[in-house]
Length: 237
Image 1 (cartoon, rainbow, N blue to C red):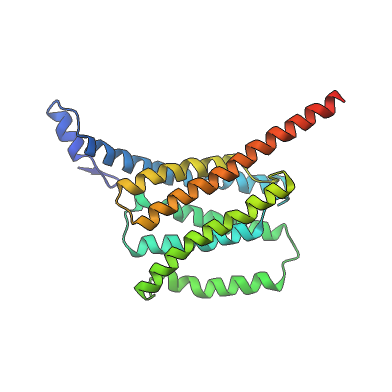
Image 2 (cartoon, rainbow, N blue to C red):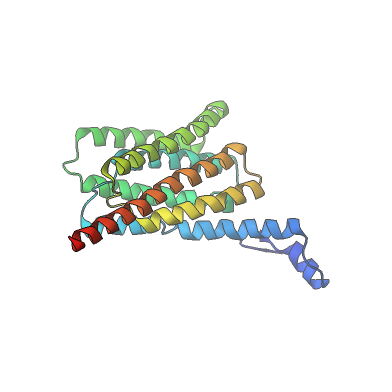
């Protein structure tokens, strides 16, 4: 008995017999349900960030390099998960994050005009390489190494933004809602990746994402408090 790929047979049989489903059955169900919840949330997770940029027509305080590295990381991670045949519930959010990351990059470069030749060179190179990555026509050992590198890529993607936040003592146009959902989703993915039996590299990626998203979220909260206090002092003065 399956609904959207969620096997309900173990729970259904136990309940039919007037028994409580086994712990392993409940954990498996919870993992699948949470996995699809993450996917559902990821479908619009970057929209608050996109809308904030469009509303203010500004990318002040945002690191373009960080968002470009996000695209590269999502490309590798999504292609790898498809290639090894993981269930969609274990990685589906990567598809939506990838699409939204591409939209963000386009918007950010639009508001950082004029667009230089450097951007077009990177765009052409990316467009030439990405079909090969998604098709999986890569040596398995190279693909594994490529996937391992995406941890460094995602880590490096957060560092420019974290440093820029620290240097400016402000998070600029960063969206609190997007960052908060990213943090919650990555924490939940730690549990689901373990429960789904995902490779160690995928589980470590979820832990890394939780830590880095947590740092950015704490910066947003910290600098908002500092801004509020300085505003209050200015009013008193």
